Image (cartoon, rainbow, N blue to C red; front, side, top):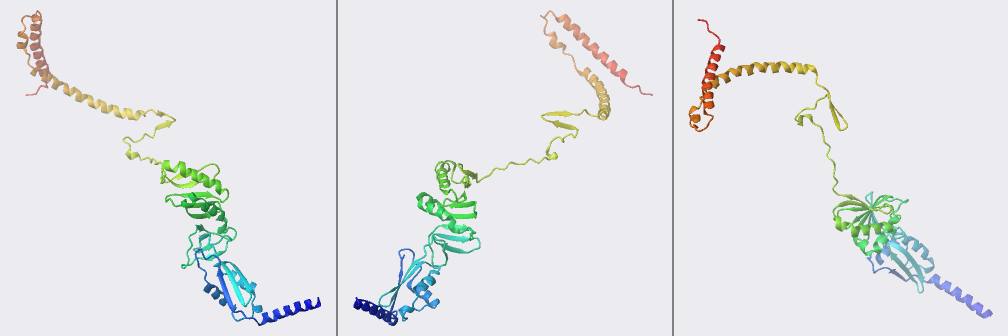
Length: 348
């Protein structure tokens, strides 16, 4: 027993002495998720170690701090998880998982970045592009962009909704808008709460109403309220306001006329106006009298037609007709004498 215990202690001491003398001869870097878009490379990891003053190759294995390497590389915006392992024969293995973006955020301040499911941010650069849902708005620590992640994940799991949704816009926490791929309208979801039932109402509206009314009829579809969908038409009719212009009327309104309800009461005209109109009527009367002599002068010019009446000898009424004919010249003579009497006598 003592011999076995001595051999064990000697082995431990030999291993410690060997580790102190062993140097790091090989650095192995493994990128876990190479199947996705690769924006992290082995050279990039080595550069990150050198920038932070970490030297691995050629150093004694016992002087290499694996946990410190994990903390330093874990601070990178492009790495989601880092694991460092000290293997046998002087080998250091670094297993890195590159960040998996789930949203691209366009902040109201003009900054653009990606976020993963844990909310870690990665600055967007021209050298890397990920085809992920786009979110626009002003996000803070109190309301980060990851608050929309359950909504986005639900939409991405539905084939119909995934093909319809193009972008999300957060104006405030109670007004989150969806911009569909169908150009012409937006969808107001309200808050994030209860988004499952809201999206079901939206699908029903797309299925039943939009084909009948037209896809360009509405500019805003709101499903933020329970059990209803409110759609706002694109072309809004505005009532024309009629402006009164007295110059356009044929007769100007009388200020003494009052309208009460549906009836109109008009005051009696003042007597002055009636009195002023009477002299005008009197002036017209002499003119009518002056016209009478002219009518009398014209009457004698009419000649009787005795011949037409003489051609009817068979009628029994001939004596009466002849009597009338004889009376006509007498009436004409009386008219002439009357006209001569009315003429004023001229002094010689």
